[in-house]
Length: 126
Image (cartoon, rainbow, N blue to C red; front, top):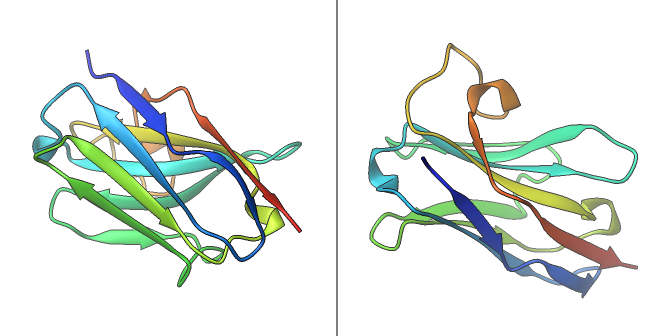
């Protein structure tokens, strides 16, 4: 069973940066899709960024130009580099994986995934 463990969350001032990591216990190079989601206080789950096995990436409009998703298959680790952080980026961030394709869902749609990490808190102060 695939397990995902996030790390790298924390508190930062507006304009700062953080890098989130997500380590999998399996061979990530074969995973069809991986992504990052977040849930802000009082809001629903939001897709932030995704990356397919062929390297194609997608981003939510709210983070384009500020966030970057990448993965290191040798380390079985997914990353989310977050720059120019704003208070509205405050949320619990979750890593997700779809080792095989599930339906025809977009990479930013939670229904595309079947494995989730436990989440890591990111707090941005103004």
